[in-house]
Image 1 (cartoon, rainbow, N blue to C red):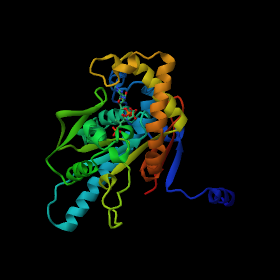
Image 2: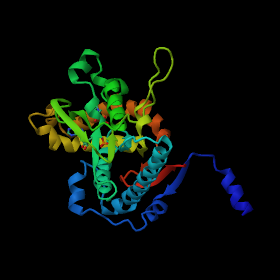
Image 3: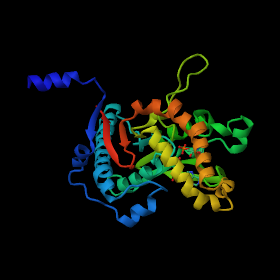
Length: 321
Ligand SMILES: Nc1ncnc2c1ncn2[C@@H]1O[C@H](COP(=O)(O)OP(=O)(O)O)[C@@H](O)[C@H]1O
Ligand SMILES: CC(C)(COP(=O)(O)O)[C@@H](O)C(=O)NCCC(=O)O
């Protein structure tokens, strides 16, 4: 006991419980696997290596944890209602999913949407990505921000904040603009509408950004002030850079060939020139954004999923309550 205590005391204090993959996988308990290999194939993003073992070991325990948390919040809601003595409608449970470009956030978000919707307590799960709140290219050009796409200043942050605030205020219907990776721009006149969901997943690079200091030095609200839970998808910067380059090479064979693709000109590049172009985009935009804006928000998450170079999650850190 004394020795164990001494060892324990030698560990630096952390607000997170740190679990290995096998420790985390055991926490799945009896949660059944509610999806097929075909369904998984359909939602998997280009280059993301998630398979059914990964779903079983990583995402089923996560789905179980989130279900327990949603149920816990339902009890808290009843307590607050008793206290207030008046009726205030329960609002959706909001989960933020953040991390670098090319780390695989969108696959995880689509997978969680499916897994969470299969619990009877919360069947209606909406997914919104923050790229819809990027400023349109014309406006980015006007502000000389085309080389800063994905940086905090390239978003309409007020509109994003208003969106999550409306969701968390219990608004019956909230809509968000839509971005196309293919045209590399906001899609005019298109909207994604969120109606009475039980859970909202908000996925994007900058969901954990702290509040912006205002002129008088006082901080305003941050998007994450409206989150009930947040997930940061983590990996070594060098691995993510490699995944970005590999994905770029695959896109060169697929999406870039489509006539409406903004990156059409890259479809004609030979292998070495394509690698150099992808590395240039990474080293001038996405890498600096990861270092300067995204990675510093990791410690604000409720849960950190850490991927190894083969894309498998090998470590999970869960914030202590
Ligand atoms: N230039 C592109 N053309 C078409 N699809 C793209 C392009 N860039 C990224 N995508 C797709 O957009 C989605 C989001 O990518 P990204 O923002 O890098 O986040 P993540 O890899 O973390 O999901 C991925 O499914 C990816 O395959
Ligand atoms: C659209 C993105 C900013 C991601 O936005 P998010 O959904 O995370 O808000 C990113 O995928 C992107 O296009 N970055 C610009 C540099 C590049 O072309 O890779």
